[in-house]
Image (cartoon, rainbow, N blue to C red; front, top):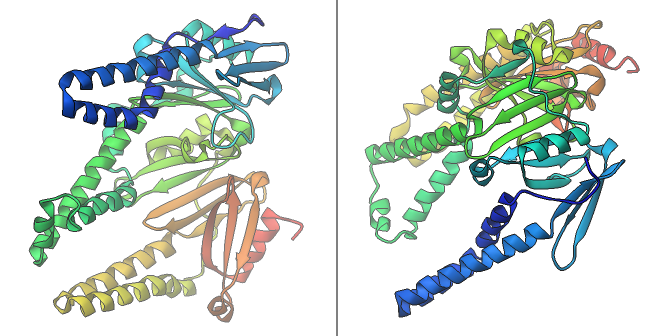
Amino acid sequence: MSSEPHRLHVAAAIDEAVRALADVAVPLLIGLVAGGTRSSFSAILFGLLGVGAAAAIGITRWRATTYRISDRALHFRSGVFSPDETVVPLDRVQAVDTIAGPIQRLFGVSGLQVQTPGAGEHAEVMLSALSDAQARELRAALGHPDQEEQAAHRRRRLTMAGLLVTALTAPQLGVVLPVVGGVFGLLQNGLAGESETLARSVDTVHEVVLIALALLGAAWALSFLGAVVAFSGFEIQRDDERLRIRRGLLQRRAVSVPVARVDGAQIVESALRRPFGLVTLRLEVTSLGGRETVERTLFPLLPRRDVEPFLATFLPELSGPLALQQRPPERARRRYVMRPVLAALAVSAILIGIVPAAWPAAPVLVALAVALGLDAFAAAGLRLDPDDRRVVLRARHRAARITLVARRRRLQQLGVSRTILQRRADLATVSVTVARGTRLAVRHVDPPLVDRFLVVLDPRA
């Protein structure tokens, strides 16, 4: 690639204009409202002035943005009045991700994000619009060429049926329900005008149940749409040193994950997917510029029986048997049951105190707590093989059964803890921590297993 400065594709000017228009949206809206009270001509004039100003800002920013490649670094220059130049050494480039939003897709171009270790929550350099030739040439110059020709067995796509099942069973209700409930709270507080009377008129159990079902349905619908937007077109591909993951409906993202940075993987069996033998695979990755919380999905939906072959194909560094070898002793069973039962009794007491007629719910809650405790006991365990390069832990966290497969040499922390009650029962909790603080613990194991845990994973102990 020539060392001369290059400009981005002209689509970048439109992208910048849209961003500028979003920045002036509030004052523009005020101007439109104020102008509209006088005449429609004033409102149209304010709107045209706002669009014209955004277009001028976009073109100015586009003309002030350039990039070039020298023998040792990528040079990125941006800014109008006080230009900034970012210099990224080529040997510091860890990944080059592709992003194609609605504007880029309209013009048939794409954006590139240049990632470096420890870059924080944002990419080191963001090139918002490049032609296919520019993107291909730049990726090659940065040492991350396109790898389109791969063997079929090294690529897997999420089918349309898989996408629909993923969306229907997406475990997002815990995030969406508070939002929908907050909207109902606003209605109840009278912030939506005439809805106050309707919200305050709810006083029967039948109406409460109907509202709860309506909130649940709304949350489910929002979760369904969010999952479709996020995982549409999901595809994973493995080359020699990297995983390449593409996904997204409105904004297509192509993320490159160096395998050397992968500390482990989580196999998540949520309450909705587990009865059907389905799991979600998530990555545990060290230092990928804030993408750990955004791009951690290794594959959104997979039959449980396919997990071992999938890892053998795409992450052989983590492949191997997943069956547990060591489990908590039988005497720990009642301790797994005790905590949820006590919580159920407390909730039942509060519920009966508020609504005495709701006493039939108490035995149901206790029975459910016993089932959850027994399930947590059945799930808990480890796989510790001195000759294995991995460690496998399984535990139930909230409503999901999680299996963590981690590289032994990449563990950040080993933990052994004992509460007062555990000391009296001669039991302990063991845990491992990987990546950016992800921790999984197995409770109520006996001393021989604690000793084996420490010796196998940390011989110095």
